[in-house]
Length: 269
Image 1 (cartoon, one colour):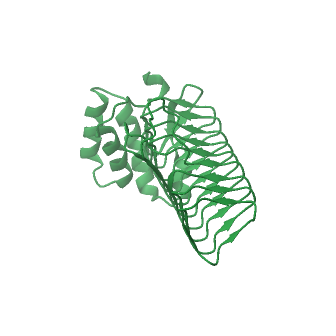
Image 2 (tube, rainbow, N blue to C red; image 1 turned 90 degrees about the vertical axis):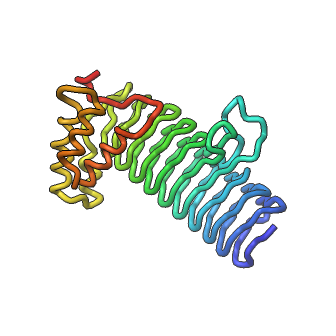
Image 3 (cartoon, rainbow, N blue to C red; image 1 turned 45 degrees about the vertical axis):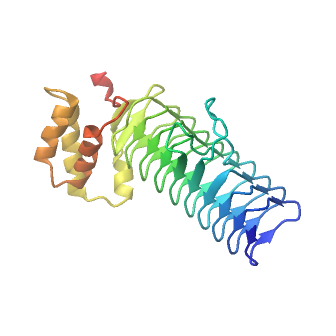
């Protein structure tokens, strides 16, 4: 066990032998840190939070009461194999958040990037890969093997089906059930989600170039309307908008291999 001298630990907290705790951490009352956990500098655990398993938490991440981080995955095939969980820096894991490590049948590791906010009761399942600056609103659930790109917002009480890919900059509305891949900068809406357009507000907030946004808007209709297959139309758009980075993100996403189909505008279903 290695605990930096600058760390403060409440007398009621349990730090199991083997844990590694960095500088200036704060471990609150009735918390548990497992024997194979590494906490980076400045991590703070409020009361009744648990971090266990082969888990690494990045610097300055904060974990609120009743969060359960690193317990065995909710997978009936899991047989106790050694798998991993990594959470990046400056994340906020609010009350009741659950995050599971990977499985032997998947990648063996679950990852959450930097600067992510997981609100009350949010869940990230085994082998999920979550990017940077992602927000999961209250009780949003990300199933196993899901990939979430950077700058994605997943609305409250929504669910992302296993093996789905959500492209960077997308937004998923509250109560949406997402069972197919969502393009970068897309906007998934309704209880059985459809592609309701582009996340233009998110792009503007992140300072995207106006001309690039206009090009993305023009390409959207060309990709999802007209003759040919979706992938054929995406390839045509690549030829016409090759110098637009936003359009390239969408086209590369659509032309990549995926085990899922793609979320489409309602009129195209």
